[in-house]
Length: 237
Image (tube, rainbow, N blue to C red; front, side, top):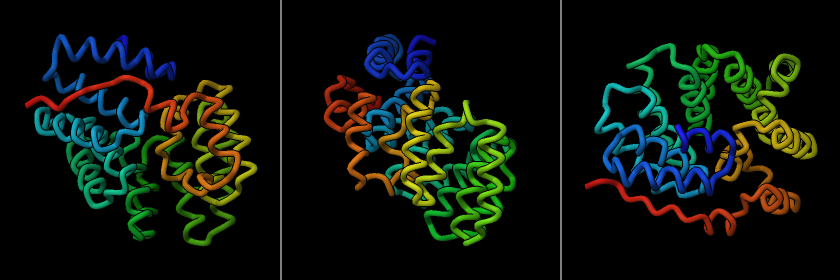
């Protein structure tokens, strides 16, 4: 619980310390390895995250959460076919799992399958993820009114707890000023999505904005700051 709590609190250094301790005690525990994968994503170490997540799927093959984690790590690394396969594996084990249809949807969207992405987003059981995904996919389809409506509902119903996702939508729609406004709100709201800002593909349009690196430095997530966090974890042999 310690490492997971620190991940939610967005204290990556403390999370790394607790996870290293947990791994020293149980170096082959798939649950601990899975948490290490999520932390590796937050630290921008995507190759390590993928290796750890794939270990978890191989050693806990009936747990849909391990496939969801593997899907997320592969998606952030741009390995779209692998991400899609992992999300579909998760859905085969738990069709009504929260986030998995959304994850599949964004991977399909980046792959160029807009119709498949829309179908996945419409099937997402969690309202927050569903509205986020629909706002993004409708924008990609050129359906501005529908995208605006999904985003407006997301803001109206979930603006405090989903401020990170609102920032993602604005960034994907290339509305940079609004995206940065909601990034700041996410930090103020202690939104758990802040942890993955550096590797979130929907924020890619902001990477060349002069405000991006100063923002990351302000929240302790610039590349050099993440690289300085000690977390040396190896995939069990």
